[in-house]
Image (cartoon, helix red, strand yellow):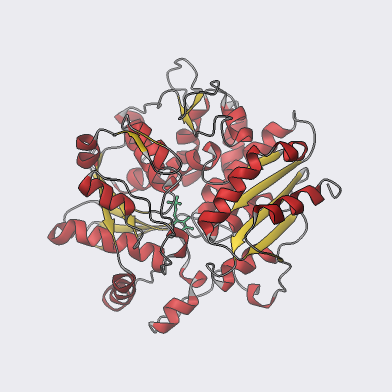
Amino acid sequence: MEGNVEMEPIRYYSTNGRSPVVTFREALFQGQPPDGGLYMPTRIPRLSLQEIWGLRGRPYAEVAFHAIRAFLGGEIPEKDLWQLTQETYNFPVPLERVVGRCHLIRLDQGPTASFKDFAARFMARAMRYFAAEEDGPRVILVATSGDTGSAIANAFHGMEGFTVVVLYPRDEVSLRQAKQMNTLGGNVIAVAARAKFDRLQAMAMRAFQDEDLRGLNLTSANSINWGRLMPQVGYHLYAYVALAEERGETIVDSVASGNFGNVTADFLAMRMGKPVEKIIVATNENDEFPAFLETGIYRPIRPSRACLSNAMNVGNPSNLRRLFHLYSGKVDRQGTVHRMPDLEKLRKEAVGISISDHLTRLTIQEAYERYGVILEPHGAVAWAALKRFLGRRMEETLAVATETAHPAKFPEVLRELGVEPPLPPSIEGLDQRPSQAVEMGGSYEELKELLLSLKHRI
Ligand SMILES: *Cc1c(COP(=O)(O)O)cnc(C)c1O
């Protein structure tokens, strides 16, 4: 645990540029700056190649500690942060070689069997850590296209002083995803809404701006919260230090992308000093970003297309604003570009690849038959994109694709293909538990009423 060079502390500014610069703690609880932008660090910390190389062979929690510490500017003392990362990352992070030097990183071993546990568990513990000094209970409001909600709900479940309201599109999540949210009970309220994810996300954003809801201490836990994005740097760094064999060699990363929290964290890891050949932004048929990289024209997809990899059905990724900032560009929430990012640099460092549902199915089947590897739709998108990018270079290129959810979360899709995924302990018994979901339409007024009713309950 040797200390790194102290520079001026990192603070957080708004991508809209009209809100004060804040500390990590403030960014964590505010979720979103008052001007409606997103928080970004005033500088990106650097790890030297030596520091990175020094992490080789270290356990996941330790690598995560180093990645997260670099961003915290001393706001959580090292001893406490060490404890916190140990508690947060108490599950395995397997790297699986598939062919040549191409790997999968299985980010699905946490309590809700998706990679969102990495960020949600850290965020919840960081909030609890800082909340000791805060007054009053908090309501965590989160709109989810599937896995965010269960990860957040699980991370806060039973945590005193917090109530979680999780909004999900009834018709766009799998049965098991829904059960992971609506069977918890206690301080978790699961709302099954008849609306698409994009709409629910807009409703949640509106609630945070709503003066009438001030008294609730509404706190965001969506991927827009910096505290939800930053911890993901940990596994992007980990994959590299676990796999690199030559000091300084580069890696190709393929990241299954929806709202771009995952992939933005990889861009941050690269800026921190991780040697990267290329970041593949792998999307399903919601190909607005791959199309942008190709044409230079950004066109959000409205409404988003409903694909098999349902957590990636996003037609205008919320973290695009952060990604643009990393390349000196500016885009607003609606997807209007105000300043073009440095496209040349972006194209050099990244590529966007869109994978159809048809190819997603084929990829699941092929990976199973050829390599005995079980993929689910999100990981299959990342794997298919990696294959397309590398072509014949798969043998010799160091590469990793993110498997972001456990295949058992998508039994319907896999069964159709004759693949029967084994159940992880976290999912066993889930199907039999009764749903406690609250049903809702798709209007903001309904959400507001529900939130207001909480005032008397907490
Ligand atoms: C959320 C999610 C994604 C997309 O991640 P982003 O950070 O929103 O890009 C991919 N796969 C799974 C399984 C997810 O739950």
